[in-house]
Structures are given as C-alpha cells and as structure tokens.
Length: 308
Image (cartoon, rainbow, N blue to C red):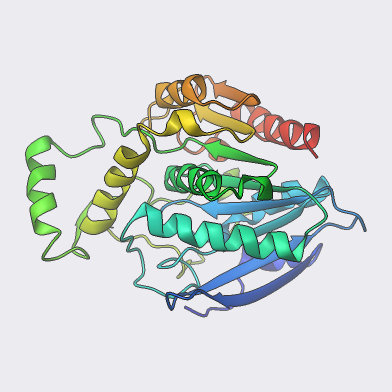
C-alpha cells in the first residue's frame, strides 16, 4: 500500500535524513524498508526494528528519534501483510514466515552497514514483534549466522498469553477446525489494535489524522492461531538462545504476563542477558507516563551503548 508520508514521518524528516526502498523476497513478497542516519558522520551501529501486530515501521518514528539523537542508524521494515509491504492486510500465516522476513532484512542491512554492530529489536513494545525476533534469533543460530547480530532486544515478547486474553479452550478448538476453511476470517478482537495515545509519544500524530497503514480491524482467525502456534513452537527452544539479550517488560502487562519474560531470561543460555521489569508498566511501555517510559528508554540506550 502506497500512501504519502505520515505526519510523524514528516516531522522527523525535518531533522534527519531517511532512505527508503522496496526489496523483493524470492517468495514474491515486496517489503518496504527505511533507514534513518544520525547527524554524526560515524554512527555507533544499526538498530533494526521488527514491528508488532497491526503496526508498521512508520509509527516507530518516536523510537527512531530517540536512537538518532544518540548516534545510531535507525532501520525498520514492514513485514508482509502490514504497512506498505505486499500481502493481505493484517494477515499472518505463521510466525516462522515473519521470521524469514526478519532474516532477510538482517542480512540486507548487514551488507549495507558491514563495519558497525547490528542489533535487532522485537516489538517496539508490541509483543508479536518480540516473538518474531525469538524465532529469528534461533534460526540465525541454527544457520551459524548468529555473528551477524551484536545482540537482540525483546519488548514484552509474546511467549505466553494472559488467560483473560486467550480464547476459551472450546473456542480455540473450533477455531483450529475453522481456520482450514477460512483463515482470513476477521473474528477475534485484537489486543494490539489500538495505537499508543498520540499525546504520549515524543513526536505525535494528530489525533484527527487517520493512519491507513495501521490495521485496526478485528484479528483474523489465522493470525491469532499463528501467534499461538508460534508461542508453542519456541516454548521448548528458549534455552538455546545464546546471543546477548535484553528483555524489557511491564509488571502490569495484561496481555503478556511478565513472568514469561522472567522464565525466558532464566532458561536462555546467553552469557550476556539482562532483564528490566517496570512496576506499573503495561503492554505499551513507551505510552506509559514518564515514570515508566523514561527508564524504559534510558535502559535500552544504556544497554546498546555498552555493547557498541
């Protein structure tokens, strides 16, 4: 989907340079990608963002702003089915396919910036991106390509779903039968279908401006089950992760219980692993008040800078 730059993007373009392009995967998907360069001639490294459910890279400009002012190249792309990339809007067939998008983009940006460290961040405080990065990191390690990354950051990764968010067992059972016939049926309320409040973001999109790239429809049946399957697929593999890792999670997250992140950090084999929990923080940490969002952003930058 091609649309003019959003106001968030226009505001940042007045301060920093952005490059964009479409790249084509061999499965036929066309992925929109963008990268912003800091004012410093020698950036510290590249931070590549994998967005969360329903979102797209254009809504990540507040995050880019933070990184750019600290001297980092900020890069992102729209996964297939979201934003400006091709594919049915809002539909996910499997998390493994999203991880293949991420693998492709990791290699793409490492070729573009071969002499600086590359970090992969999952979610921008939305959990499907975090789950995608878990899959991506494990695939990189299995392919002996873990050296492409200097580290990974997970924002409330969807490694478990709260009981009051997950559908009842009988509904899930019927859904698993129905998905064979109608995987794109929009049935379920989406837990991530509401963007962060505009007035909480460092660069704000006017509330009256619609974002045609954001998927605000009901969660498609196949997408919901793909996320649940993606969680199940990695649940017994978490101990294999060896990359340097930072996990950030709000203790009041009503979508993904924070104890799932505690377990993740506990079992991961990485010798460099850090967990930051934020009392009172919900699922969208950057959209919380300054008492939560400020340490969330400060902790992330400190972790990156210590490994630049």
